[in-house]
Amino acid sequence: MPAATTDERRRSFDQMAQLYARARGAPPPELLDAVAVFVPPPADALEIGCGPGNASLPLLERGFRIHAVELGENLAAFARERLAAFPFTVEVGKFEEAPLQTASVDLVVCSSAFHWLDRERALRQVVKVLKPGGALALVWGSPRRTAEDNRVDEAVQAAYRAHAPEISRQTVDRMGGKVDEIGQAVCDTPELRDFETRLFPQTHLFDRQRYLDTLATFSDHATLPAAQRARLFEAIGEIIDGQFGGRVERHSTARLQLARRR
Image 1 (cartoon, rainbow, N blue to C red):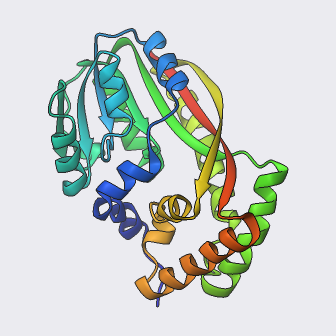
Image 2: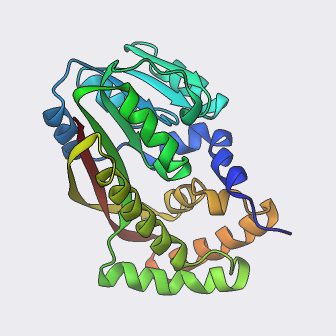
Image 3: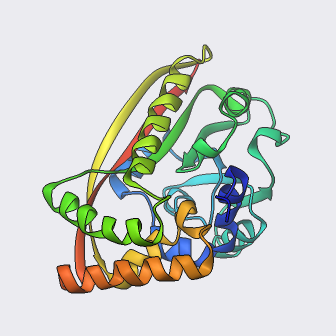
Protein backbone atom coordinates (compact mmCIF):
# COMPACT_ATOMS: atom_id res chain seq x y z
CA MET A 1 0.00 0.00 0.00
CA PRO A 2 1.48 3.41 -0.95
CA ALA A 3 2.48 5.80 1.82
CA ALA A 4 0.04 8.53 2.77
CA THR A 5 0.41 11.79 0.90
CA THR A 6 1.30 15.01 2.69
CA ASP A 7 -2.27 16.23 2.32
CA GLU A 8 -3.68 12.98 3.72
CA ARG A 9 -1.37 13.27 6.71
CA ARG A 10 -2.27 16.91 7.25
CA ARG A 11 -5.98 16.13 7.17
CA SER A 12 -5.69 13.06 9.42
CA PHE A 13 -5.86 15.25 12.53
CA ASP A 14 -9.49 16.09 11.79
CA GLN A 15 -10.49 12.51 12.67
CA MET A 16 -8.99 12.60 16.18
CA ALA A 17 -10.27 15.74 17.89
CA GLN A 18 -11.08 14.17 21.26
CA LEU A 19 -7.99 11.98 21.29
CA TYR A 20 -5.71 14.88 20.36
CA ALA A 21 -7.22 17.08 23.07
CA ARG A 22 -6.65 14.38 25.69
CA ALA A 23 -3.30 12.96 24.61
CA ARG A 24 -1.33 16.03 23.55
CA GLY A 25 -2.35 18.56 26.16
CA ALA A 26 -1.31 22.22 26.27
CA PRO A 27 2.10 23.83 25.86
CA PRO A 28 3.89 24.33 29.20
CA PRO A 29 2.53 27.21 31.32
CA GLU A 30 5.91 28.97 31.47
CA LEU A 31 6.00 29.13 27.65
CA LEU A 32 2.51 30.63 27.51
CA ASP A 33 3.47 33.07 30.26
CA ALA A 34 6.39 34.17 28.06
CA VAL A 35 3.97 34.83 25.19
CA ALA A 36 1.79 36.90 27.51
CA VAL A 37 4.80 38.97 28.60
CA PHE A 38 5.86 39.51 24.97
CA VAL A 39 2.31 40.60 24.04
CA PRO A 40 0.48 41.63 27.22
CA PRO A 41 -3.22 40.76 27.26
CA PRO A 42 -5.95 41.75 26.82
CA ALA A 43 -5.09 41.61 23.15
CA ASP A 44 -6.47 40.29 19.87
CA ALA A 45 -4.84 37.12 18.56
CA LEU A 46 -5.12 35.07 15.39
CA GLU A 47 -4.38 31.39 15.86
CA ILE A 48 -3.27 29.26 12.94
CA GLY A 49 -4.52 25.67 13.16
CA CYS A 50 -6.12 25.72 16.61
CA GLY A 51 -6.91 22.00 16.48
CA PRO A 52 -9.10 21.04 19.45
CA GLY A 53 -8.05 24.18 21.35
CA ASN A 54 -5.19 22.85 23.45
CA ALA A 55 -3.16 26.05 23.17
CA SER A 56 -6.21 28.27 22.71
CA LEU A 57 -7.68 27.54 26.14
CA PRO A 58 -4.72 28.66 28.27
CA LEU A 59 -4.21 31.73 26.07
CA LEU A 60 -7.87 32.66 26.50
CA GLU A 61 -7.53 32.15 30.24
CA ARG A 62 -4.64 34.63 30.17
CA GLY A 63 -6.86 37.29 28.62
CA PHE A 64 -6.40 36.96 24.86
CA ARG A 65 -9.30 37.23 22.41
CA ILE A 66 -8.77 34.65 19.67
CA HIS A 67 -9.98 34.17 16.13
CA ALA A 68 -8.67 30.92 14.65
CA VAL A 69 -8.33 29.50 11.16
CA GLU A 70 -8.54 25.70 11.24
CA LEU A 71 -8.38 23.33 8.27
CA GLY A 72 -10.45 20.55 9.85
CA GLU A 73 -14.22 20.91 10.22
CA ASN A 74 -14.40 18.42 13.11
CA LEU A 75 -11.54 20.08 14.96
CA ALA A 76 -13.10 23.51 14.50
CA ALA A 77 -16.47 22.27 15.79
CA PHE A 78 -14.82 20.64 18.80
CA ALA A 79 -12.87 23.80 19.65
CA ARG A 80 -15.93 26.01 19.14
CA GLU A 81 -17.94 23.95 21.63
CA ARG A 82 -15.07 23.53 24.10
CA LEU A 83 -14.31 27.26 24.17
CA ALA A 84 -17.84 28.63 23.97
CA ALA A 85 -17.47 30.51 27.27
CA PHE A 86 -14.52 32.56 25.96
CA PRO A 87 -14.02 35.27 23.32
CA PHE A 88 -13.15 32.67 20.68
CA THR A 89 -14.26 32.29 17.07
CA VAL A 90 -13.01 29.91 14.40
CA GLU A 91 -13.40 29.65 10.64
CA VAL A 92 -12.73 26.55 8.56
CA GLY A 93 -10.24 26.80 5.72
CA LYS A 94 -6.63 27.10 4.67
CA PHE A 95 -4.77 29.85 6.47
CA GLU A 96 -2.94 30.81 3.29
CA GLU A 97 -6.29 31.60 1.63
CA ALA A 98 -8.16 33.14 4.57
CA PRO A 99 -9.59 36.66 3.99
CA LEU A 100 -7.74 38.43 6.79
CA GLN A 101 -8.08 42.08 7.71
CA THR A 102 -4.87 44.10 7.40
CA ALA A 103 -3.19 45.16 10.66
CA SER A 104 -6.01 43.70 12.76
CA VAL A 105 -4.31 41.62 15.51
CA ASP A 106 -1.61 42.01 18.14
CA LEU A 107 -0.49 38.38 18.04
CA VAL A 108 -0.36 35.53 15.54
CA VAL A 109 0.21 32.20 17.27
CA CYS A 110 0.63 28.68 15.91
CA SER A 111 1.28 25.53 17.92
CA SER A 112 2.87 22.60 16.08
CA ALA A 113 1.18 23.32 12.76
CA PHE A 114 3.17 25.89 10.79
CA HIS A 115 5.23 23.20 9.02
CA TRP A 116 2.07 22.03 7.22
CA LEU A 117 1.66 25.42 5.52
CA ASP A 118 3.04 26.92 2.35
CA ARG A 119 5.76 28.85 4.16
CA GLU A 120 6.03 31.84 1.85
CA ARG A 121 2.29 32.42 1.53
CA ALA A 122 1.73 31.88 5.25
CA LEU A 123 4.36 34.44 6.22
CA ARG A 124 2.78 36.95 3.83
CA GLN A 125 -0.49 36.43 5.69
CA VAL A 126 1.25 36.88 9.04
CA VAL A 127 2.80 40.16 7.89
CA LYS A 128 -0.54 41.34 6.54
CA VAL A 129 -2.64 40.68 9.64
CA LEU A 130 -0.21 41.89 12.33
CA LYS A 131 -0.38 45.42 13.63
CA PRO A 132 2.96 47.32 13.74
CA GLY A 133 4.73 46.12 16.87
CA GLY A 134 2.59 42.98 17.01
CA ALA A 135 4.19 39.56 17.38
CA LEU A 136 4.42 36.12 15.83
CA ALA A 137 4.72 33.19 18.25
CA LEU A 138 5.45 29.70 16.89
CA VAL A 139 5.29 26.84 19.39
CA TRP A 140 6.99 23.49 18.82
CA GLY A 141 7.76 20.31 20.70
CA SER A 142 10.85 18.22 20.09
CA PRO A 143 12.50 15.23 21.78
CA ARG A 144 15.31 15.79 24.27
CA ARG A 145 17.22 12.54 24.25
CA THR A 146 18.59 11.52 27.64
CA ALA A 147 20.11 8.13 28.33
CA GLU A 148 16.67 6.92 29.40
CA ASP A 149 15.07 8.21 26.18
CA ASN A 150 17.72 6.44 24.11
CA ARG A 151 17.06 3.22 26.01
CA VAL A 152 13.33 3.42 25.29
CA ASP A 153 13.95 4.37 21.66
CA GLU A 154 16.27 1.45 21.09
CA ALA A 155 13.77 -0.97 22.64
CA VAL A 156 10.74 0.17 20.64
CA GLN A 157 12.69 0.26 17.37
CA ALA A 158 12.31 -3.52 17.29
CA ALA A 159 8.55 -3.04 16.95
CA TYR A 160 8.98 -0.51 14.14
CA ARG A 161 11.43 -2.73 12.26
CA ALA A 162 8.96 -5.62 12.45
CA HIS A 163 5.69 -3.80 11.76
CA ALA A 164 6.29 -0.29 10.34
CA PRO A 165 9.81 0.13 8.96
CA GLU A 166 8.62 3.22 7.04
CA ILE A 167 8.47 5.08 10.38
CA SER A 168 11.87 5.79 11.88
CA ARG A 169 13.74 8.06 14.24
CA GLN A 170 14.93 10.01 11.20
CA THR A 171 11.36 11.31 10.78
CA VAL A 172 11.75 13.19 14.07
CA ASP A 173 15.19 14.45 13.09
CA ARG A 174 13.80 15.83 9.81
CA MET A 175 11.10 17.65 11.76
CA GLY A 176 13.76 19.43 13.81
CA GLY A 177 15.36 20.58 10.57
CA LYS A 178 12.04 21.98 9.34
CA VAL A 179 11.64 24.03 12.53
CA ASP A 180 15.09 25.50 12.01
CA GLU A 181 14.25 26.31 8.38
CA ILE A 182 11.04 28.04 9.43
CA GLY A 183 12.96 30.09 11.96
CA GLN A 184 15.37 31.15 9.24
CA ALA A 185 12.46 32.07 6.97
CA VAL A 186 11.05 34.29 9.72
CA CYS A 187 14.47 35.91 10.11
CA ASP A 188 14.59 36.51 6.35
CA THR A 189 11.17 38.20 6.25
CA PRO A 190 11.94 41.93 5.98
CA GLU A 191 8.77 43.02 7.78
CA LEU A 192 9.65 40.99 10.88
CA ARG A 193 12.40 41.77 13.39
CA ASP A 194 13.87 40.70 16.73
CA PHE A 195 13.64 36.97 16.09
CA GLU A 196 14.50 34.82 19.10
CA THR A 197 14.07 31.26 20.32
CA ARG A 198 13.33 30.23 23.89
CA LEU A 199 13.53 26.64 25.17
CA PHE A 200 11.47 25.01 27.91
CA PRO A 201 12.58 21.50 29.01
CA GLN A 202 9.83 19.07 29.98
CA THR A 203 9.57 15.61 31.54
CA HIS A 204 6.62 13.30 30.87
CA LEU A 205 5.64 10.01 32.49
CA PHE A 206 3.66 7.67 30.26
CA ASP A 207 1.83 4.48 31.09
CA ARG A 208 1.20 2.07 28.24
CA GLN A 209 -2.14 3.53 27.15
CA ARG A 210 -1.09 7.17 27.28
CA TYR A 211 2.05 6.37 25.30
CA LEU A 212 0.02 4.64 22.58
CA ASP A 213 -2.65 7.35 22.58
CA THR A 214 0.04 9.97 22.02
CA LEU A 215 1.60 7.99 19.17
CA ALA A 216 -1.84 7.74 17.57
CA THR A 217 -1.98 11.54 17.27
CA PHE A 218 1.07 11.69 15.00
CA SER A 219 0.16 11.72 11.33
CA ASP A 220 2.67 9.07 10.25
CA HIS A 221 1.09 6.65 12.74
CA ALA A 222 -2.51 7.81 12.19
CA THR A 223 -2.35 7.16 8.45
CA LEU A 224 -1.06 3.59 8.72
CA PRO A 225 -3.60 0.95 7.68
CA ALA A 226 -5.66 0.05 10.76
CA ALA A 227 -4.47 -3.57 10.97
CA GLN A 228 -0.81 -2.57 10.62
CA ARG A 229 -1.19 0.14 13.27
CA ALA A 230 -2.84 -2.34 15.64
CA ARG A 231 0.06 -4.80 15.27
CA LEU A 232 2.61 -2.03 15.80
CA PHE A 233 0.86 -0.67 18.89
CA GLU A 234 0.45 -4.12 20.40
CA ALA A 235 4.17 -4.76 19.96
CA ILE A 236 5.12 -1.40 21.47
CA GLY A 237 2.73 -1.96 24.36
CA GLU A 238 4.28 -5.33 25.09
CA ILE A 239 7.75 -3.74 25.14
CA ILE A 240 6.60 -1.03 27.56
CA ASP A 241 5.02 -3.63 29.86
CA GLY A 242 7.75 -6.25 29.55
CA GLN A 243 10.91 -4.15 29.59
CA PHE A 244 9.84 -1.01 31.49
CA GLY A 245 7.25 -2.22 33.98
CA GLY A 246 4.39 -0.49 32.20
CA ARG A 247 5.78 3.08 32.51
CA VAL A 248 8.33 5.10 30.59
CA GLU A 249 9.76 8.54 31.21
CA ARG A 250 10.29 10.74 28.18
CA HIS A 251 11.94 14.13 27.93
CA SER A 252 11.22 16.90 25.46
CA THR A 253 11.84 20.56 24.81
CA ALA A 254 9.05 23.00 24.04
CA ARG A 255 10.45 25.61 21.70
CA LEU A 256 9.05 29.12 21.32
CA GLN A 257 10.04 31.17 18.27
CA LEU A 258 9.19 34.86 18.60
CA ALA A 259 9.41 37.81 16.20
CA ARG A 260 7.90 41.27 16.06
CA ARG A 261 6.24 43.16 13.20
CA ARG A 262 8.10 46.29 12.11
